[in-house]
Image 1 (spheres, one colour):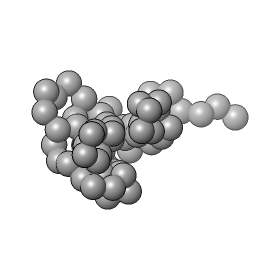
Image 2 (spheres, rainbow, N blue to C red):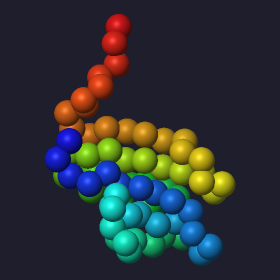
Image 3 (cartoon, helix red, strand yellow):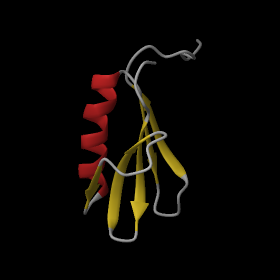
Image 4 (cartoon, one colour):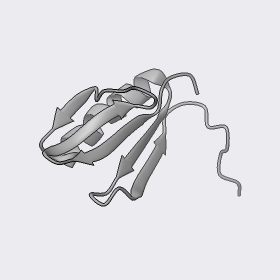
Length: 74
């Protein structure tokens, strides 16, 4: 993968999209679905991964947009 993975994480006021390794959020959103759509566009453009978290911080979404180094077998 070539770009930074995009994380969608909860905040005290909504949801943030943040590139992996960045110190600041790229953008803040009131609802998760808008944050996911924004992060998906970035991940597709950068051929990276989208990782989403629940309100408790648990990961509940992982999508790869680009060359997958570990494709599913079978």
